[in-house]
Image (cartoon, rainbow over the protein chains, first blue to last red):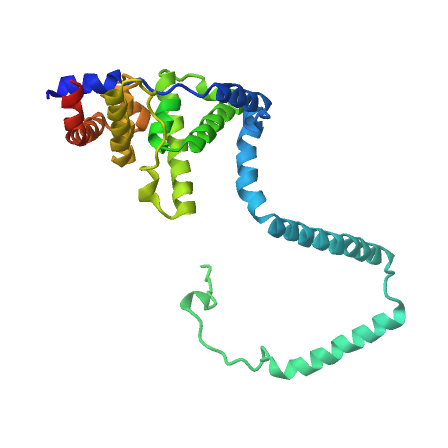
Length: 139
Length: 153
């Protein structure tokens, strides 16, 4: 048997037609299918799949993250306002306080002073020649 | 499309599901066919991909992939001539024993009349691969059907 004859014999075999009721059922299903959102505007076409891939699989995590941000926001908003108000309300320290502060500053200076080398005690080291006093003799 | 899917899946219910899925997909995404040069090849590719997905799901579900292709599905129209009928039944059975990729190429070449280039475009393979799959498949069919073919000839 030649290859060509055999192929022709196969090609001649009639295929079974589509069952009669399928066409109507499939077309009905296609007609009732809701249009996809990916056929909408360009923005939706790109954001839609991204939304489905990133957000939908881990909705709980995103919701928790959003809640955490909300808590942070709520905690921070009144705190910031309060500190501003306190700063506005605070009056300049009175005279007694100023006196006490000045005394404390002096005491601190006394404590620190012995630790710091005095410029008088600092050993005198010879500087560079350029530092030597130059005497200009006018003739 | 119906015959191609039935030959590929060897399962009538799956064929119906795939056809419906294909048409629903086209109805939901009417833009899919925009700018497509070879609509027929494009539709065959869509159907082929859906059929592969279905076969994989079925294989996972039934855990017996090898047996799937041998499922008896009435693929050819019935014949009043007993010899012809026997030939068609044996041909359908022999097709079922071929690997799915060879079966797909054979079907598209013999019963859809596509060229190897068109088959290659539809199945996303090279024309050489399409030709070799066809050759292997038709050789197996010829071996299997030789006695019956000689009789009806």
